[in-house]
Image (cartoon, rainbow, N blue to C red; front, side):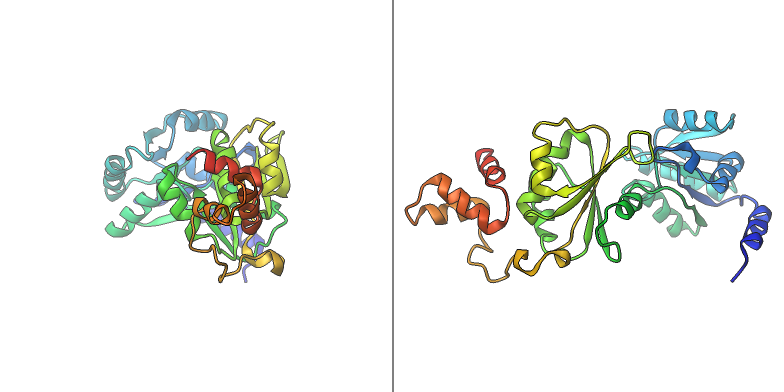
Amino acid sequence: MPHFEDMINDEEKNLILGGTLYLVATPIGNLSDLTARAVKVLKEADVIAAEDTRNTQKLLSMLDIHGKELISYYEHNKRARGEVLAEKLESGLSVALVTDAGTPAISDPGEDIVRLCEERGIPVTAVPGPCAAINALSLSALATGRFAFEGFLTTNMGERKKRLSEIAREKRTMIFYEAPHKLKATLSDLLSTFGDRRITLCREMTKRNEEILRTTLEKAVTLYETVAPRGEYVLVLEGEDALPEESKPKEDTWYASLSHEEHVLAYESRGISRMDAIKAAAKDLGVAKSVLYKELQAK
């Protein structure tokens, strides 16, 4: 195994290679988290492809890097710009790809340009650094040995419900990204799907106002009924394997194939009131009665 000094020497000899795509991780909050190698690549690359060129220009200015060719590359232009970048790479230019914060190609259109480069035989290498998902996982105090990264849930209600039902019995720790204006709805959906379990909410990571909230889904839903969410969130949710045996849903429950509405109607058919039916169904599902009530009211 090489000594640390040997690795430094090897890096000093490693020039930026033409015709190579560099995936450069940028800070998720604290500028000091940018690695020396990332700075080197940004200084020497012929072209920098960025999710938002305005944000990247600010970063380059702080690093005293000027005169770089900046090309925007994001979700809505990735097909056309991917071809442009591939042509530049095939002509022998080096390209550094950055996202607004964190590691490119993770829940990011960068995965498409990597795939395009693979198809065309263009070399790709990573310049590792900050990643919000891994940062949050390490801070979560939940199991880190096995985890599933889910990124952003779709806003299409049908697809969202289908996706959550697919992972309802996930045994690994799960990681989600969420915007502040969608946080409350997502927490309610997670509670309805998974029942009450531990969750860690991370925001403003590595910044002065970093907040790491280790709580439960039910308490988080209640909290954000009165507290306005701020900043981008990473949610780290406990997997089923970590739950006490008595808290795990049973495969042979009589309501397993029923929708939540059908579940409540089944209780009502036994002659009890709507509210008592909701209470009973919520207990079966391991969710708060108020959450189930709101879900049914919205239909």
